Length: 117
Image (cartoon, rainbow, N blue to C red):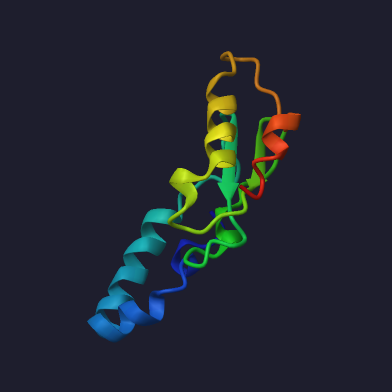
């Protein structure tokens, strides 16, 4: 995640409801917690994001692409992710890989039809 302090589009609402002091304390705590985040993960990683999310800034959902990591864009809303057929297809494909035999996601013909389902 690039910047967890700016990951959502609702921070202004949180500020409005809770006051600036509480938000500053939250930002300080998050900065301390996330300062140790590694730049690249050492295990196979697939980051699924949606440019059409509407709540989370999709740029904060990307991982550093390496030989064992990838980013996959899904056309869906934030609340539709758990019900999106393409998302479920990608997750099932990722979970079906054997340990130590990671390969980047390759959409099949059937899966491509789910992109805008």
